[in-house]
Length: 325
Image (cartoon, rainbow, N blue to C red; front, side, top):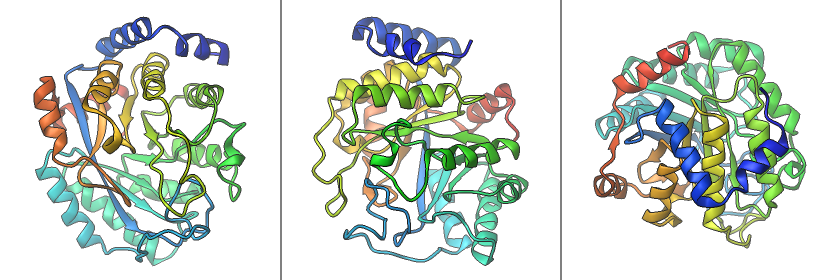
């Protein structure tokens, strides 16, 4: 039964002990509560993006200290994936600061990267902006595992954050990805000045996609000097727990990924999020252009008695979910 906004709201606003208990119970029905997938994100083209996303230091509309670089070559990216695999990553994600890829040599280069990552036995995910049906099909043919295209926030708050593309543009790209048979990675960012109702609206939009995303990254805004949100008010960390737990309850088989902002999170907050259903993280020192915890993750897992998911576990979960390899 498709949840309404009121359904999402009633769960989101439960007392935390009840909310976390329900989410943990759902999590255990569908996932190993002790295993967390490690993903690595690599910026393959940085800066000078034509979009005006208020949170993003890579936008050409903002005066930030991000150093721009053109598209990397495939050999360099595949070698980085090999190193990430050696450090326990099972998914390698590529991010390009584009409005969308052009059908030229750059796109062919990305396809070569995808094929190289898949040849290592890793999942391959890319985020390239807006896609056409044909581009999605070509990525699928190259073996792409997942395409990331975040909804970012609620439909009502969206134009307060981005004006160069619409919420409907994002939904259209997700539809192209689905048509190609590629799994969807889509989530959002909290702490951008939105109200609680916007966080509920974001979760409702994600949970009512048909089907919901296989991966749901939940990002906490990383404030960067020079962006319009550099002075945004810090969000209550308990709101993150509510987002994670509600996502887990309404998208029980999805991966819920703690993404940006983990460097500012306490170990205790991350532990509570794992209990509430988060089962994936971005590992490594960098998350595109912002800092990430790096080696602290393994120490945290050891303290919690948790572990990194293996590639075999990841493949079995995808097979069970019926997602094409």
